[in-house]
Image (cartoon, rainbow, N blue to C red; front, side, top):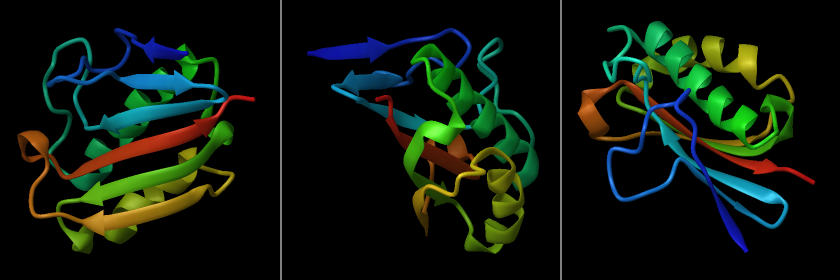
Length: 125
């Protein structure tokens, strides 16, 4: 059985997808971008501010599923510019203290021209 995760403490999906899906003991969360849920506006113009908002959005989905950052087993991080890698990591490491497996790639463009996006896979068992 699949269970959809939805919270107003993270941005609503901007396309035909769910914020997250629980399948068995795992949560597969959709990528989060730096949208302030209350306003629908992009937060910040630099990588640090945007990464902070992304992590808050990820945290809201984790909380809705009854989890936290320590339960994350894999992240996939997308950066608009690999020159932001060090600054992004400085924010990332404050949240993902258990150092889950990770992929981090630069992409040509992200939704709404944001600077970063993060998706997570979480073990709930």
